[in-house]
Image 1: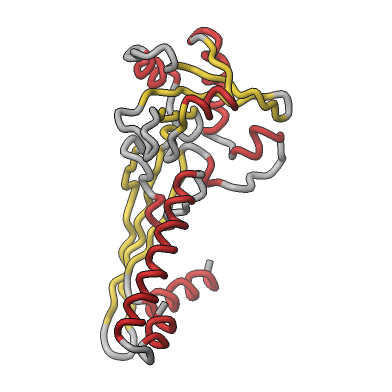
Image 2: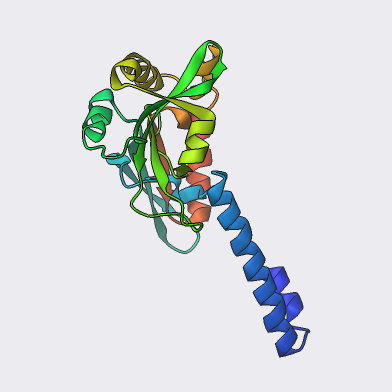
Length: 223
């Protein structure tokens, strides 16, 4: 980004403004499209992705490291993040449904003998085309960022009753507490992507970069 900005300084101001506006418009279009297709990666903002994620500070380690000019404090924060939705939580949300299109759905696609179970709740806001959208909940990851239209729902899922959804929901929720999504869907022997587990532990490190790297390297050699 800095290289791009430096290079357009050689242009006339009017061209600078037009080129930068084109860049900004293109970037906004890419981000909007990524959000609509569920491919937008928010990076570090992924901690507490939705308002229903449960965050808890488990513990904090504080270190002091001496470097060439002074001392630097380094803090390591261990967070617990829970994103899954239990069956009781799904039942509570399901008790407030008003539209006939709301409720539990099961996927048409079968993976390794298993189907995806979701809860769809009508969103109060419509999309940019004026269509109704639904907030999607999954047992292993809770509320989803991407909303679905009724057309998308019926294309990929079949509506089922609460009684039909109960067993699959509980099974997936319990499995996600200890195993990643790959283990659940494909019965893999190794945990490949731990962040898919609905209860995960995250470590945040803050402090001066140089001192932090020296301390971590020292701990790695000693431990």
